[in-house]
Amino acid sequence: MKILGVDTSTPIGSVALIDGDNLVAEHTLDIVQAHSSRLMPAIDSVLKWGNITVDDLDGCAVGIGPGSFTGIRIGIATVKSICYAVDKPIIGVSTLEAIAYNLRWSNSIICPLLNARRSEIYGAIFEGNTKWQRLSEDLCLPIYDFLERIKADTTSDYAINFVGDGLETYGDVVRENLGERVHFADSIFNVPRGATIAHLGGERLKHGDTDSYWTLVPNYVRIGLY
Image (cartoon, rainbow, N blue to C red):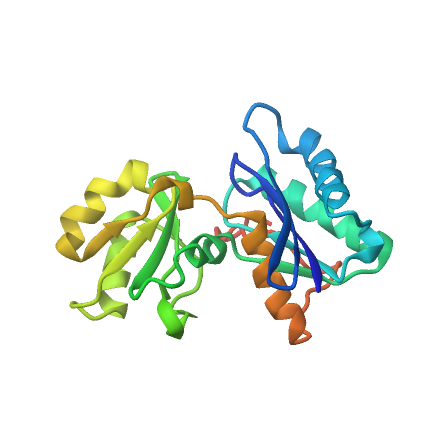
């Protein structure tokens, strides 16, 4: 199953092509130019590297946020246009889930954390290892409220892996409140990869779980920002 994965929810965008469990090609976008000018050339390059066209795809997955409002809109609009033009399924994937999935095999609680500005964070809670599952919805709230949510939803003897660019601003607060339970992932895991977006989308597509061109919208989390 050939799946194109696209994420533009962070300054470092990513486009990837997978075929089943195999990564065929991946293009990481630099942060010099806007996503609007570099996304289509990146998609074109990835398809050429895979020696296929959009007609050969089985579906497309796209990161729907939370994250950069403008970046998310660009990614969703682009992938919607492609899927509509060639009549392919589209699957929206949570940015936070894609980041957490980078650590899915760790035997711990996994908390992706992004800086939402306005003194708030985007976050979610997952359980890793063979029990991989979501323990909370995607959230936007002050960091202290998020940490209280973690304490309420997890047992005190379970390690917690944090990942995401929110640690640059709130890392000290996290350690002060959760102590020795906390581990921070290496910064290379802080952004969603196109390959991960494609994989998560492909898993849903296998079960016939797809989205609609007409109703798929950005997941801004903050109410009233659609």
